[in-house]
Image (cartoon, rainbow over all chains, first blue to last red; front, top):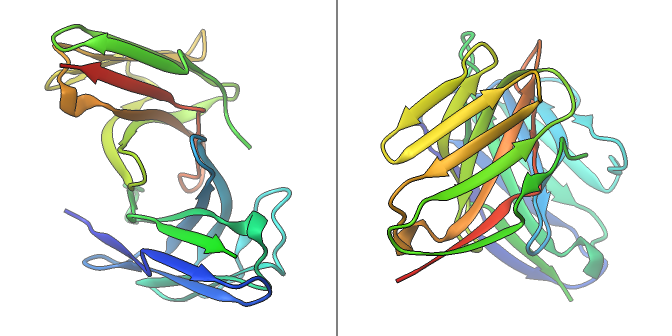
Length: 116
Length: 112
């Protein structure tokens, strides 16, 4: 089956620093990837849609200058949390979508970000 | 933004019992999907039901979809302790790529 990986699986950073999270589709090409965040005991909230070779589309209320998304290739999308603050601490999950009219999504294992 | 609500928010049952979770949504959809998430882990895709389908089965799972009521239900029969997890419905809106909007989720606890 299709596998999506995320790196790192967890990261602790200091307030004011930037953190990059990678999302890779390991055995398929994904023209579209999605980024979600999840607070403890809450649901997944879609942050943005990442399209290979073009700018990401952000959901309402998500700061595009704070959450930089780059979909550089058909197998890699990155999310950079810039100038992180403690309130950015969350579980970040990506998903990658197959193409060819099937449009199935496969989710990565998530990245736990803690900002101190 | 979230599509809708899931009911109940939490469910506690004994092994062997059936568990039913409900999901409501607000807009027209292309399909509805159910996912499971163990604590602090990623999502596991359980089942997808298209807007023109009314019922779907997969092993111990049964999903129904009522587009007139904009609601779906997930039934897990003969539950096991290993079924303990959070369950989310997610809707893909009509047209274009499948942007998924997740419901609030149901936390299921199955006691041995």
